[in-house]
Image 1 (cartoon, helix red, strand yellow):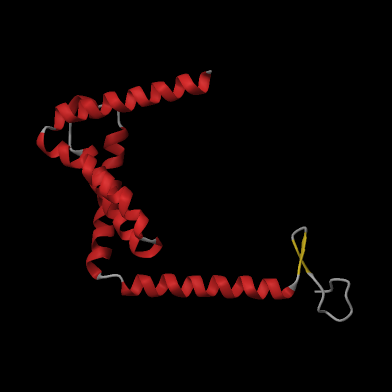
Image 2 (cartoon, rainbow, N blue to C red):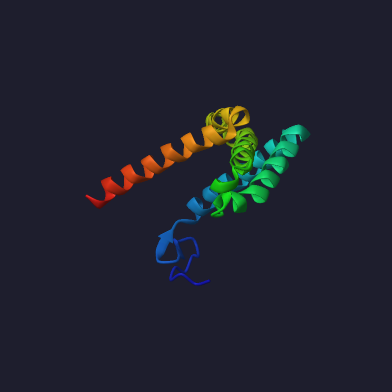
Length: 144
């Protein structure tokens, strides 16, 4: 590739930008190190965490459609509970790769799911009421 410099050591054109080759090498090295770190974390994560992530994905895939469906409120099934637990499992798995802060949403999701075990219909109605009021508040704020 000819970039207008006879020595071949000048800036390289990437898109509409001119970038020094040294910066491209540094960027490539950073990407390679990040990929190696993620692969090492993946391999060092226990089989139980991978199993939990797979179970979480199954719970999400199997229940999101029912949760979004119109008839969910009429039946009061366990789809909300399963989606919350599945999300918690996936966040717990992601925390093994991207840091301990992802345990916070995992714990929150499982904490929200726990009361659903005891009184599914009444707790679900409470969650729906809170969600609807939050959506109404956001709508009123955005419309202003």
